Length: 102
Image 1 (tube, rainbow, N blue to C red):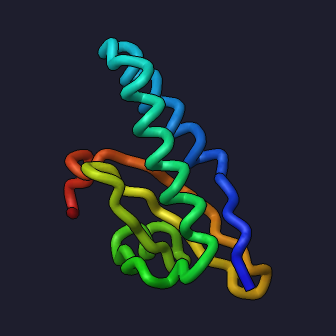
Image 2 (cartoon, rainbow, N blue to C red):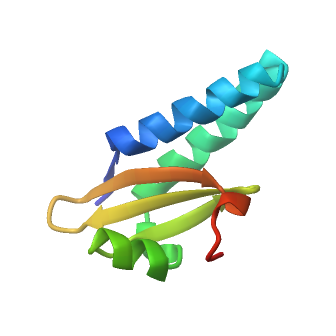
């Protein structure tokens, strides 16, 4: 049985900030579109076997619940799994260089 993938408000806010940054830097819309396509594929791929990605000990400790991470190029996507409700919730998105502990 597949998991339902959901976006937390915190993830959406992180992503919106990043997209605003890309637009401010005048990244071509087609480039942004391709990047968003790759992000979309990666996120939808979490509906099967979401535990295949590693647990992030720092985010897990700060969140108080097991949090996993997956890379998309230089970016990190953090998510939590609710097995009881078969749900994956994306909770944060950041550039890897922004993480002092990585």
